[in-house]
Amino acid sequence: MPEEDEQSQAGRNWLSTLNEARVNCREKVATAMVSVPNPDKALWPVRSRRQMTEAHEAAMQAHVSVIDYADQLTPYQDERGVDEEMWQETLATASVAGDELEISLSNLQEWEFEFYQNRVERDDELYGETEDVEQYRVLIPVSGMRACYRQLNQLTKELGFAAEADAAGLPTGSLKTPQPKS
Image (cartoon, rainbow, N blue to C red):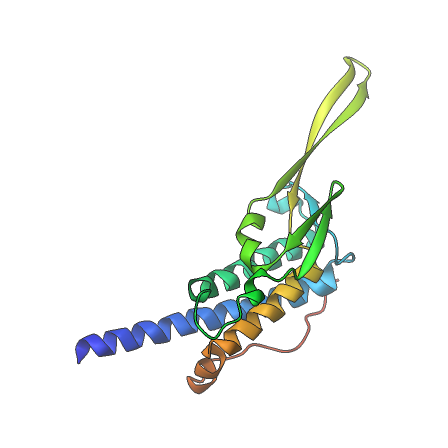
């Protein structure tokens, strides 16, 4: 009996973790939606946290929260009754340096550490012509994050985890859209 209680508690803990990831993702994506003026922007300059704009920080946090939410469901990717198309379906695209990158639940891990470098020639009074390298972080565009969030919610429902979370009385988070800081 104690082993069953431990397994039951482990299941409740995981369900709570999944629900926290879902609520956090909802909040971060909603914040990014009101903070980022261009919902299709994918390239962000590499900066320290102190040098990030509010929009940049909101996009970064939403990017991380979408990947975290997906990480919670990835082990159930091959469950019977779940349409494999939901994992493979292209939910959005991002244009990066002339390339169209597809966004799907199955390739979210590839977006985790994507960078882009651009070589720029500059005229320097002292050294003449120099070449600098600008580095950008490639983030899932906010429009793509929203599509991923919706698809992940659908998967959560199809796997029966949403009903379990509701039955366990877990909070579902605020539905209010946060307002940008002034």
